[in-house]
Image (cartoon, rainbow, N blue to C red; front, side, top):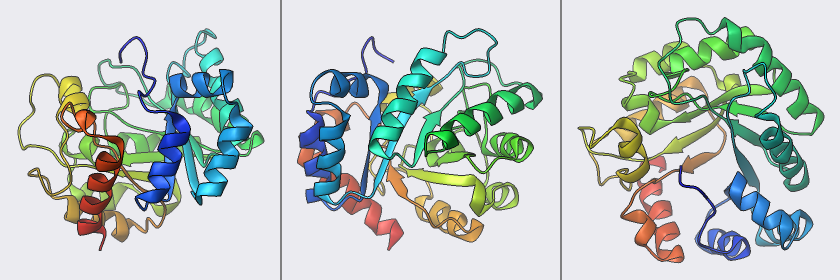
Length: 261
């Protein structure tokens, strides 16, 4: 949420380093994509992704998509262009940092329209519920996806957002289905929140096995749901951001294997 979210690492360096450390995919935020488009171009990046053997690309993030005004549409159109050029599996979307809504119905038609547009561009749209957001939990997100009823609309299940929303693993099993989960993101964290929820999610996540969360139990719960798609790792952490690129990728990869194996 800084003025610019562009990575300090070159996009091609990240693609090559991801492949060298064992990863199967990579994601890009909108500020990265703007830099890529204005410099090397999407075609060059797509060629690098293919040459590296990466099989999964995702792009993010669009918010405001439920509003009647079109202030969000520039971002959305940019993400559609990037997703089509990079053959992205999905575009990640979210909601504002705001009180939880009681009724998801006003979000249904806007999300269905997004899914239709995404599908027309060869991709899908994946909502990430946030405990400090308007759609604040996985059960609430699952309700919205069921009501939207479009194969191009699904969920990103980020474990941090599961345990910080106080959602149990049994609730995940009860509310999620394999067809609605497009991606899963893994991390670890301390038992207690440090600072605000937003500060905690941005700065205090830990490598898997270095926190106090039941990451292995979460992985099993998602397998019980029937998830068989891409497992991502999202270590948003002030400490992790100080690591050199290869070290950060290697540590994230190896610690994730301890729960996936």
